[in-house]
Length: 173
Image 1 (tube, one colour):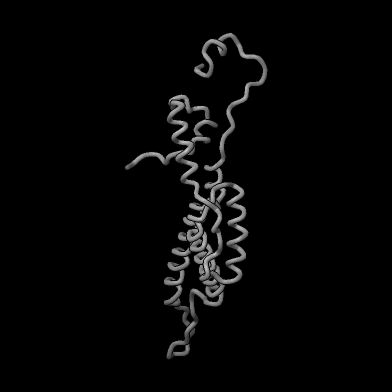
Image 2: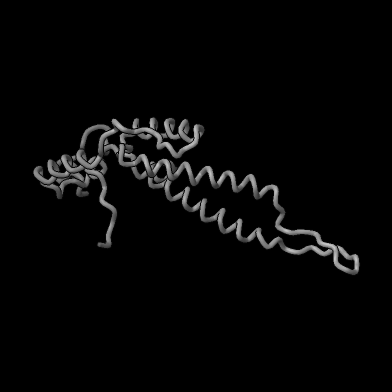
């Protein structure tokens, strides 16, 4: 079904646009969101991660749990993010050792610069791993833009007294 992503109830209420929701709908939505959050009692790094990846897993998971956006259901997603990140970093290290071009001597003794045939394949792999990392990071709330979407806006505060028009018409002005 096409359309906008569903926003959490707190975000809707923070924006001040929850007037279209009835008390019953708000109650249902709150209970649904609480049930969807999931438990955090089994947040442990999977066995297939290396020791360094497990350490990073625990650090990131702890930060995400502080934000109340991480649960047992997200463990595998974080592990896949760390695995693709590790592969990406390893590929970058290896690519620094390889040059995009090679200098080859021809039969006549001239030096000719030619393209390294493997370099474009490595670039495609690098781009694929980068996209995979960025997508997983965004899904987990590890990027600034994804975290900004999670911030719950505070309702507008009034500084001072309301005018007669504001008293009569509220926020409809």
